[in-house]
Length: 156
View (tube, one colour):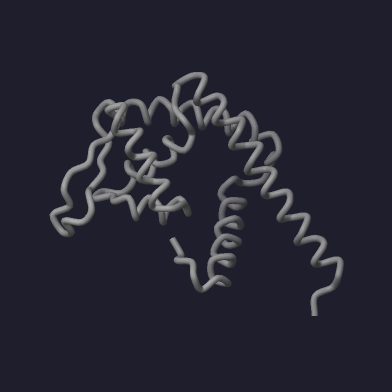
């Protein structure tokens, strides 16, 4: 049986993770919008598209844990700027393959540099002698545990 203190610790962990995500997202998005005129959500989608050959909207939704409808709207916005394009999926006519355009690839590289600098500025001092990859591994394990406890969720 879990102690009352253990539950309080988990509640505090939840609260800190949520606040960290919100504050960090807002800070990084502010810089990305100021320097590149791009929403951080669009950057996240572009990153997934660049990493997954034959990428479909469903693949992006699964990778980012967001809805297919939300992803479709973001892809529409990215396509409207000329940073990506859709082409017919030869394996499934009901879906499209999404690819970054050459301009989108250049833009992604530029924005990635900005994101990395901002994350380093904000996170590196707090990590000090800890490895970011160790902390990332712990977060991956936490996310997997959350998904495993909900049979309605797919692991990605």
